[in-house]
Length: 196
Image 1 (cartoon, rainbow, N blue to C red):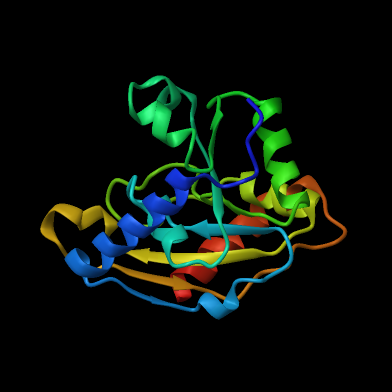
Image 2 (cartoon, rainbow, N blue to C red):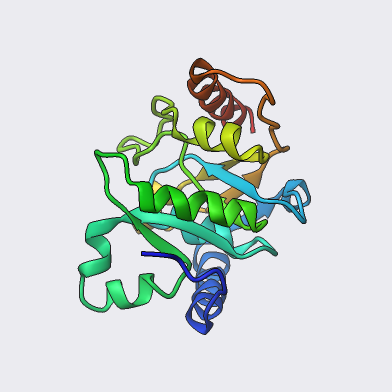
């Protein structure tokens, strides 16, 4: 599935409604938006605790945000219809998905903002998990900056704890790299998230 690189009405409506919800119900505070590079492809790299992390990451950005979702979500009634229209595209987990990575590199080449989780999967206890090499691999090969993003309390949505999101300073990938750099770059991103 090739992603449409023009955001739909549903994307903007969803971004607005989520922002209203996060600010009014969860007293969300955001900072560091000035750290997000403009006029270039960029990887937004937050910690991951909840399904609410992608909309929270994107609703305070000026740029439109694109992200991958597991393929199974796209076949769920209603959800599948909506997710296809909110800048998401499917990825087959547990295997190399060539089509998904074509979308990834096409988006970055066209100066879009792409969400990728350095941990690769959600944390069940709210603590940072182990880094995966994926973000580092994409950043090195695409030669785009990565913005570490710290999200607080999306694992406590039912308790209505205050949400916080902080965008850190961009990390520039090495111009000369080996496969070993992929994981070390992802580990550096998590280290920067921890400091935020």
